[in-house]
Image (cartoon, rainbow, N blue to C red; front, top):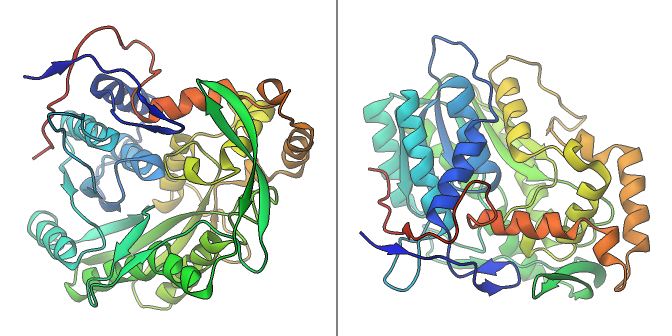
Length: 392
């Protein structure tokens, strides 16, 4: 037993430790947001990227609403004598406990999803326990990828394409909001290509290929990769930048997968949210804090959107598709009235008024919650056990 007093120590949006009890309570709170559906079947799902953000929400929504069985994959760090485990480690342990309580057989694998050895091990597990999968949800946000065929390491970048860009961005100093101007360099062709290798559709299609080769695609198999489009305010950094090139590749991958017999493939365009991945992108933090200022409780959470995604995947509700065949869960965000209000706030934001114009306090609290802090009904003055086992 290793009880420790855990405090939020870090810099910017990065914290050195995570709070195990806070992460567990956060998962418990998420499960409480889901209304179960009565069903005799237990769909089998493979969730690649199940420990954080939308992947975590999709996993919990599937477990709580439709009683899914299956496998979740993530890549987390165990606790050491100096540091706690990553937040995703503790969230996974809590999610596994919830799945067991619900009677779901859901396994969690801690490994590099890009590696062929991971694919082989996971598919062995699926073949042995389930005989195949009904759904593959792909939600991976990684800074780098090692191509298992060539052992080449690709590194993603957050850069503009064509011409340099500049954006307002939200930062914090001693917990207080600070408005910054951030310059975004132009990516080289090689940097764009590497970003596509990391964040595009190549690994997604390799998972489908591996399942198909092992004859593990059940009748009616459906797969979805999670993506984002966002506002014109973030467009030069995101959708028109190097990340956007990767997202375009993800969407073209969905189109090519749909041409196969027995495969229904879509991208799901989710709305803006506070995640560990999105907080690293300049301008996104400011944009989301302004979006929350405009919408308040009407801002749809990843859990609300994941419930909607599962309802559409299972046929409970019709697919909400756009002209390009993408599932749209972001219409609330891109409503013209909402975007006009956010743009007005964005344009009026200055160094002096950022604390009033943006919902900065909410955003900073949401960042802390990613690491298990600022979660209601958790005693942060008490010690907590940090040596939590990965679910077997």
